[in-house]
Length: 419
Image 1 (cartoon, rainbow, N blue to C red):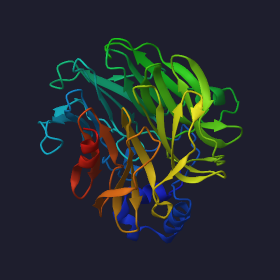
Image 2: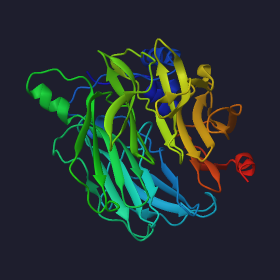
Image 3: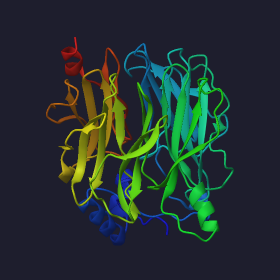
């Protein structure tokens, strides 16, 4: 079964809402009542020409801060991935450098975006999903620069199965000293199982690792089977190694979140919202680690135990009580988390029926108490989700919008409190 046309399309194409049919408006209303877009489970192998698909925006950007506070931007324009940097918090950017010499249909919308990270030696690392013409099919791609972003290596495909199937929703994390991990959702196990006439729920979580700053990657590793098909994965680096979070399928069709240390193995269920649904929520989690190893997580659920956007922190075997975030009536959703020492910043997006807004709240004591939610930016057009960024000297929120372009909001009051 393919995706139904539901709220996920209308959210990304707000300007078309008045022109869609009544049937699709009814689908959107139903999704809004749940405060989230939900798509039916996917089946592979149905060819769909690219020209028959609705046009997708490329508003989703990759952003990061390097060790010197320089802001890096990875964005897609005309099927090309471009990288530029700014030394004045986004007021001015360098001339963009081309990463993909051949045009690619790069996923840069909603839960998918190019990922960018900068190692301590200045190596710039990128991963992204290349969407193929066949329905849901794609490849995980990677490139790097060893001259501080002046030139980039030829892109390579990280998934090593050579199957024409779904590989997407990649995440990227580095330790800064040469180790690189990429994780993604992969349908190769599902396809192989169905070819044997057997049943396979969801897809699988796969990873690839490099120990030389992305010059070489080892073989793909199948880490977990029966994961949700199309919720973003998330990676963060801790003092004990890389941590990955994904929406898992528990029991028959309970889609809550799981977490694992990729070095130590083992799978831990970290939410018990009991969201039982035979569909894909298109709504992954965000996770960040402080220097002591404490994890900070934000996620959306529509389960029987709780509904809405939530935050919790995880310290070893201890977990805090989930606290609600934002205004559920305004579809508070798609949160991002960034952390440095005791400062934790959460951003998310809301929609009041006319305009989107970027919202934030912060904690200066490691998530024990929080500021009141604050609206920091508003846009009347289509938008990306806001992305929080923190380094040792600055706190920024990046938000790409169709109407105003890329907007960088410096959060001065948090910066002042840290001095």
